[in-house]
Image: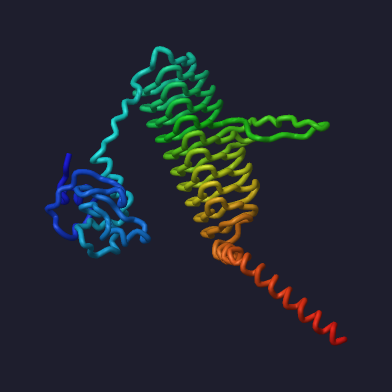
Length: 347
């Protein structure tokens, strides 16, 4: 349903600059938007597109003061636009209600009030499911695992035995929590699995992406701190400890017994060796190969990872290597000519 500019500004607590009588019929990205749409600009690199987009209204940061079209100024354009999109295109998801007849729930398991359990879910002995938690079809909940209240666990998630999950945890399809840690000993030329008798603790308000795996600890706990968000296809090994409100992006891999602080960002395809410490507020850039501990509030990149400004200088120098090799070869030829001339003069 179309909305007035005033309605949208009220929804996102924004300040209108320009004609407030504009009617908005939809929302789209700044390059894809058409007349009648609202869009947003959060990245300073795209500010120039404000006057180029076909959108009728643009949500901007507070730094933008005017444009050729009406704008709504807010503190966080990306978050504000997400609210607007949700208002235009509400997602209707029908969660399971009650316990499906095909679910297999052990007699010793405890299921709270308002829980929804889909088809073919298996819940083993002494597991505990908190109030209002939703478990979609095909999930496996191991013995003595405890899941808190208001969690949402999508289809085909495996949560092994003795895992502890807090409240309001969101786990996407295909994730495996509490899988066997990758620990082997070479005995007489063959590898034997070292028993992994620990568990996993997922604290409140954590989100875990599709097909992510979190291994159980060898003895104690692999821990994911409160509010941390984990993308799809992330591997977290045994005994890893991740602090609060950290972000781990797709295809990152964290080796065993690494400790990661609060508010850390680990970008896509970053790889971390084991037994290192990543300080609070550190940023590990995409594809960083982290071979040693990183100090708090430090950004590293490259392989092996090093302070970002240093890595950028190295990359810049590498880009000049073809020209440097060419110049070196030319210098070598000139030196050969000089040496030949000197030898002919009997120097």
